[in-house]
Image 1: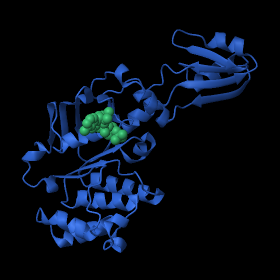
Image 2: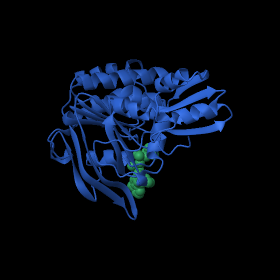
Image 3: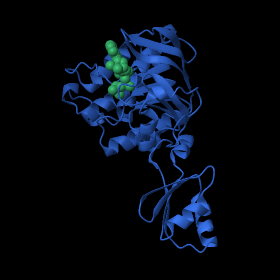
Image 4: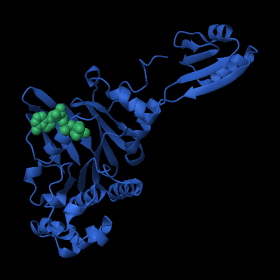
Length: 314
Ligand SMILES: Nc1ncnc2c1ncn2[C@@H]1O[C@H](COP(=O)(O)OP(=O)(O)OP(=O)(O)O)[C@@H](O)[C@H]1O
């Protein structure tokens, strides 16, 4: 389990992380989402004790990272910046890491197989592609068989096959009862990988919600209706919670009524419809909407704010 309590990090006048509180639970993959510069990497560094917070605190498996006697067995992490000795082979890089904490050669070989680097294990890391480097970083994170895994943008640089592989691996790690926190700036990727989402913008918490709930809220309730009788239909549909806009001749964009209801009202009044289409905001659109101006949203934890697409020009 990972906990952030009122975490704040300032670099001079710049606030990278701003009073952030959340809990990451074991058993599911949690996506850590935010646009570039939102503060994801900084938060991850704070969780790992690589940087100290200006205020607030973080706990991993109930303790501060620095208080763990064998941190590699508690938390495995891959941060974005690669700090691998490029002259070493993948095998020797992992062996050197293992040696610092009494991890066996057998385990080194296990993780090499787990991440699919067996064929290139003896090659110099300097010659690795970005994707191979990511796999090596993941191998390092898993070396200590940790209960908690933190990965910063692990999908970067992976080919489609690698992306599917990491998705499957993360789900497996979570199913084994581990806590898995994965950062990304790609909503679409996280929607396929994560079950829970923590979304930040400008260092602040914007949403702490299940992916299911995020998807449900992202599905806007705008229905596009095409008919020869727009005027008559619009007056029949009008109501206190209904908004109707017509941006092109013969077409209404209706908010606040389900498609079924619109179809029923039209049929009851003998109006023929040429089209009746619920318009769904894509997840990516919803995410962008949500993070566009993070300062607008000052969400309490465990709530999703502003993802309904309100404010869009309909
Ligand atoms: N060491 C530092 N010194 C000064 N400013 C920093 C430092 N580290 C991060 N920042 C600033 O803090 C903010 C958050 O950066 P951070 O790298 O945590 O964001 P991020 O969400 O991980 O973004 P990205 O996806 O681009 O890596 C940015 O404005 C960044 O410029």
